[in-house]
Amino acid sequence: MALETFAVLDNATDDYAQQLRSQNEPTQTIDLQGLLLPEVSSSGVFDLRSIGTTALGKLLEALPIPIMLIDKWFFVAFANRAFCQISENYKEIQGERFVDMLPSPDDADRARLLTEKTMGLLERVFAERKQQQAEAILKIAEKKIWARLHLRSIRVNADRHIMVIIEDVTAERSQARIGRRDEERLRQALENMKSRIRKQDEELSRTRQRLESEVREHDKTREALKQCLARELT
Image (cartoon, rainbow, N blue to C red; front, side, top):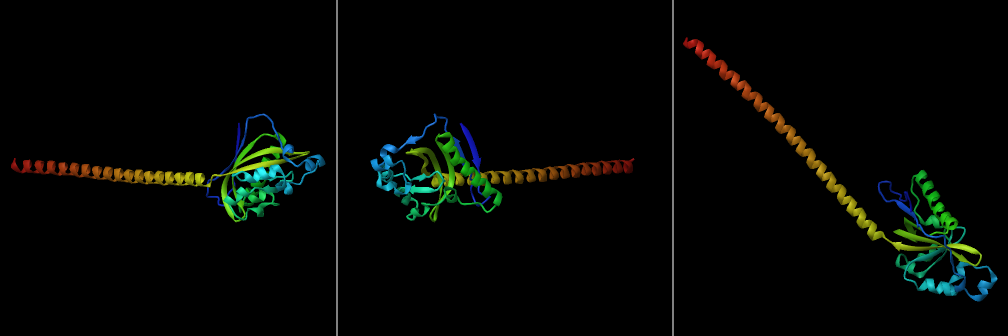
């Protein structure tokens, strides 16, 4: 199982990373021709934008999980109504390039890398015909979420498309981020405590050395006084 990581966020201080996992499973493309209307199937041509009139479209609309279909040009051709859980204006994403749904970093190099990685992911779904998984920030209309993506190649007549099942893991990622932040704060607090203890130990060591030096000086003075007194008595 391969694992690839690449940055996705605008804010370079956030340690989010997009993860891509290629499933170790047989090559497979799901054939959905049987769910199309007979006249559509026989024509050999199908426009994904009209999928809502087919049994496939009705099935996708009935599912409670956000699902989108991406055409061979990597544009979002269909998004089911479960996307309204994320944004009521979800239909705005239809007709967009999938890559444009990922907020682009301000840094030009990171933005270019994100585009290359995303396009590479989509091309890999078509080329390998294996399920792919990725995690990324997605912008659905005005709403941003952290999404776990499950991508699968599907075939509609002669054309192949990509079905993307979207799992909203924003709460999970936010909790993990809070956990990492708390761990970092605890680590910093421990480091500060260790630093204070070291300083106290150093101060105690200097105080002990100073006291030992004063005791030695006191002993020398007392010995000198004893010798002086002895000379006076003789």
